[in-house]
Amino acid sequence: MGSNRTYFRTRERLAGDCVPPRQRSAAGLMTALADAYERGWQPADVMHVTRRALGATTVPTAAAAVLFQARASSTPGPAPREWRAQLARIADGEPDAARFAEELPSRCDPDDFAAALDTAGWQIGVREWVDLTVLWLEFPRLNQLCEPPSGWSRVPVQHDVPGAETADPKVLSRIRGLLAKAEATEYVEEAETFTAKAQDLMTRYAIGTALLSGGAAATTAVHSRRIHLDNPYVREKVHLLTAIGEANRVRTVWFDRFAIATVVGTPLDLEQVDLLFTSLLVQATRAMQAAGSRDAGAARTASFRKAFLFGFAVRIGQRLKETDSRATAEAAVDADVRIDDLLPVLAARSAAVDAEFERLFPTTRASRSRTVDADGWHAGQSAADDASLSAGARAIPR
Image 1 (cartoon, helix red, strand yellow):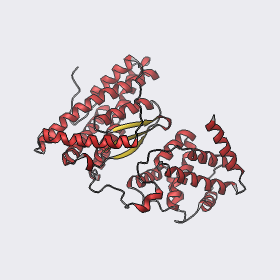
Image 2 (image 1 turned 30 degrees about the vertical axis):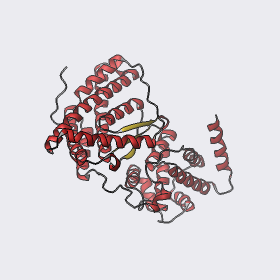
Image 3 (image 1 turned 90 degrees about the horizontal axis):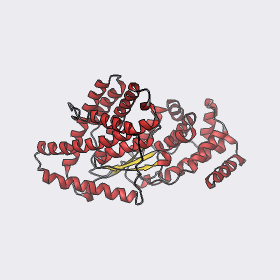
Image 4 (image 1 turned 45 degrees about the vertical axis):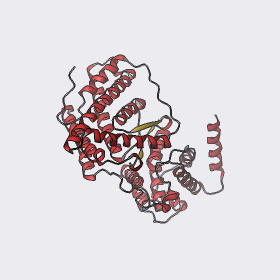
């Protein structure tokens, strides 16, 4: 009830000023956005929660505001690489908002923004402005995964740790291309072939480059990123993400209220987890839909599908750990490194990840397991056994 009272008091205050409505709302919205950034939020977080809370119809306005604020504050120059990438993805997803922001003067204030909206015929009611402003004002504080905008002038432009491992853009481009083909094809066998090639490439690259590079825990670069999840079956998707992370020395924490997961690990491991999650979620969804087409009864219920995804996540985590152990041994042989010399390196990297995770999230609690549909659980485990993890891999014998 306290939160609702705050909401309505804020709405009354924003609607009761003597400034013209459009200008009043624009100024308040920009202040709310800037304050949210200082509390640890990033552009992609803002857009994700805005869509979930206010619906898709508000997204273009939110995107225009986010892109305008970035242009007005000269954000792209000193911003971290990931921040700039988020702004680029927002612009790609909302091209009308991107064109609108690009046409504004490089230095302008909220009044100019409001006037430009009117000139462009952008139909936005005062209520929509107020809803956006109140939502952004009430964002709670999040863990800061990078320096907030107020501190960018005090840190190097690159915002990167010297000597930190970074994934080769060419390798990532090849992986994303393979996964895009896997998601686009209607043929399951063809999709699995593309996915298997992508998974084989990322595993060999990550282990060969990251794990054999060495380094003590004190010098291991550990980063964090947020992954936004959408309905349906968000909790089950988190289980899949967590299982993939555990197999790749990445820790995961879940913010249920906003459907945001934060993953903590080395840059290369984070890339691998992100790409694996995308790929295996596609495979899991396809297998779940196939199970539903074979059985029009129980397989189409929500309880079956939740159990299916949960069972898939548990089994795929086991398979990934087995694959990781095998690939690590093979990478050691290829690099002429004794496995006994490699294990301390991996342990040091895991220790560095654990230390950073505890710094960011000193108080967390484990998610409780729940009773699940037995048929869905076993069907999900079976589908996980059929999922391909490397080029030429075969299903596990039953």
